[in-house]
Length: 91
Image (cartoon, rainbow, N blue to C red; front, side, top):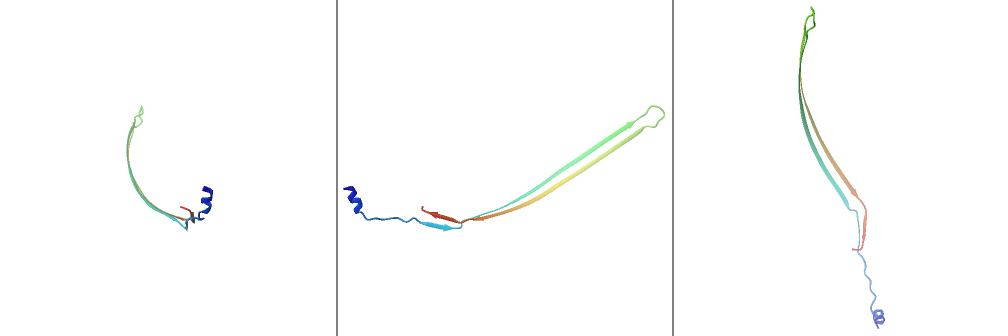
């Protein structure tokens, strides 16, 4: 009986929705960096040489100073874009 009832029912079908397109992905970024460092040096040397006998004494004094500063700046900009075909079938 069930078989007969199922054969008597109307036949039907369902269509699936379809989609087609070109999705795009876009990325943009900017980075900025600033760096500064400083180094200071002070060097003091004092030397005396007194030889035996009638040779004269030798005396030397040295003072050395140095100051350095380094500054660095950088900026980076990046842009990326991609597009691709896409087809969807069904839900």
